[in-house]
Image 1 (tube, one colour):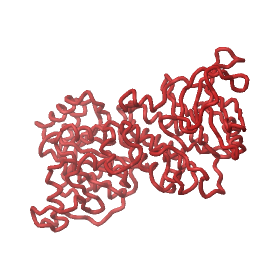
Image 2 (image 1 turned 120 degrees about the vertical axis):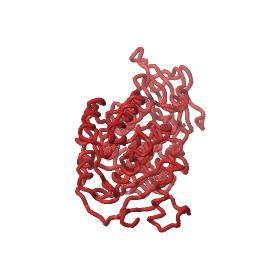
Image 3 (image 1 turned 180 degrees about the horizontal axis):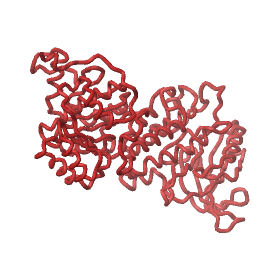
Length: 497
């Protein structure tokens, strides 16, 4: 509630024009009322009453003039300003926006906002932040939170409270007043420095995390990744992590930069049905996920995942290969060879490295989400041949889902069976890999699936080593990667001998 009693009540008139009808909301520093316009019958406005220290009334007046000068479709128009110096009361008259606050919406829908609305909402917020931050005298909002976002009946967004917005003054080392909402305010708003555009971007990250965890979290703390909704677009996670960096210089530096990253990631993920993945450029920022799923036991999923990981590592940097199965043994055996560990004696570390690829053995989904917030360019998931809910979900959400099936003529139907069993899920991004398959088997499967991304994988006995024929197939699968930079080989088969 407002700390001091209001001067207004039902029927009160502000500025000889605006008659108070009812209270819309209140907070620690202000109260907002609905008012009718006595000069324009039927027109309603929102009137915000705040109490200001008379000593800073000049600053308040300057800030009000700044707010009145703003014009953006996602900001309420501020059309009038009144002040009463004896009491310290000031009044802003602005557009009345019909709708519900995002905070109330989240409460009413059990913390759920449809996943397809999250990125459009973020882009709307960024659009208005970009407008504020790029003015001749930049405006820093400083209190981006669910209670200050109004959703109209058309699910459009409006910022509704400019109670602590301020013009950015480059000559100051820090703000003289520390304001903002705990959980959504950037660390520098607690007294460590002056707020700037990056402070609002931190609050955007907090807002997105709040939406992605069903309203449970707005700060990145230990274990938060376990509460992120599973169906959300993967590329959001590293973006949120960067927005929430403690130090401003480690965050995105402008709203425009975040907009570009969101659009680049979203455009890359939204490949249209029938459009080959090989037509898309892979020269982008952020982490991309390749998920390798075997149709049946012995189909070669792990072998293919290793080959793909080292192919990508030879052409890019920062590749992680993740064994997404808590009881799998393949990576444990490989780690024994790499690190010289006695057979059967498990290492204390689940991560080891081979030729620049970071292997993560027996990993959980929560670990994968944590890795997405890191610096990896690619994460390759070895899902084995399991189709439990967790691994199937990771496969369906991946940027590059790879199905590995037997190339034997009598086993090709295993792939069509899998496709039919999952036909309720979009499959235009899927890629089918058939080790040692004939060209006829590939042609027939492409026809049956009505899908052109079916590839025969050649004999590749050592997946750690570069193989020209294998590279030709993977070049087609991942067309557009950067120039090959060859590295020292691990030579797994040589070490076995």
